[in-house]
Length: 161
Image (cartoon, rainbow, N blue to C red):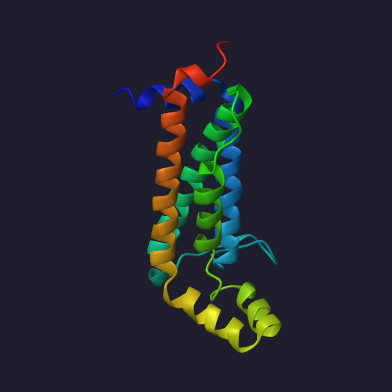
């Protein structure tokens, strides 16, 4: 039960709830546009084919977890005497990169035209291992959450309000 105390401490402030919600909504939109599930032109359309359901569920988990982790890291950064740790960047960055399927989006065209054969190989690897890469990203976000939670439990590094 002690692990929920930092979560409650951060999200008792409505500003961090709003920040987490905005981050989660932004990344949810980005992931679904890149996975070609959400379209804005010529009309707003959202469609999930059967083979994309698992990827869609993982992008929801990633978006929510990104919002929580980044908000908690902002809280630590604002209230801590020490510098921001690597937990924000390692888990968050890999999750963003792995959650947008490079083989399924316009990024694949960019990779192939820019890097030639190496870009085509990278595109096929991303397309083939999209789900495992998303799971690795979620695992890194879980580690980032654990890391920031541990830092918040160490009250000696935080300023008292």
